[in-house]
Every structure is written in C-alpha cells, then in structure tokens.
Length: 96
Image 1 (cartoon, rainbow, N blue to C red):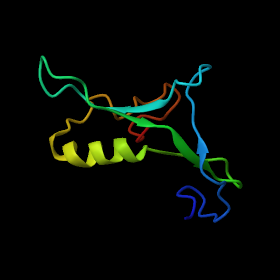
Image 2: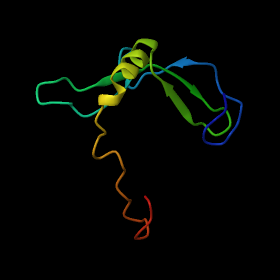
Image 3: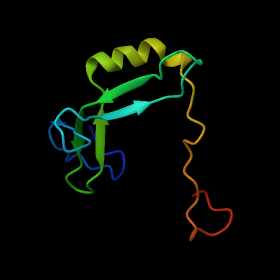
C-alpha cells in the first residue's frame, strides 16, 4: 500500500482510531437519511494507517461496516454540503 497523497510506501501499521477523548468515540461516515422515518446510514471507521513521510491519515471501516456499506451502497444519498465552501481568501473562481 502506498500513500495516496505523496506516494510513499512508508505507512504505519494499522492502528486504532478514536475521534474523541472517550475510547468508544469513533470516526463515522454518514449519509443523508433515505426517507423521513428511515435511519441515517452511518458506518464506523475505527482503524487507520498514517504516512510516515507526509503525515496523511487513512481511516478504514470495520469489516462489519464495510459489508453493511457494500450492501446498501447503491441506495445511499450523497450529502448536499459535501463540497467544501471556498475560503474567504481564495481568489474568485478557484475550486476551493
């Protein structure tokens, strides 16, 4: 596996990710609710690797969540605000 940012092959071993101070808080990949009374699709990323050269972090879904994502992938709705808004200091017309 190579770093998707800098191309380095110097990645850390797989480690446990936590998104907060509590051990059970994990990064989550969330999608829009598919209907008014349906639950919001959410998948836990509790594992990751880091590039030892540029510091990029690569989160991974758990095996269970990867299978769940695969099962519902075609029905997921993209978050409307997924494209980041441009920063105030970006020149007009820049991609952000």
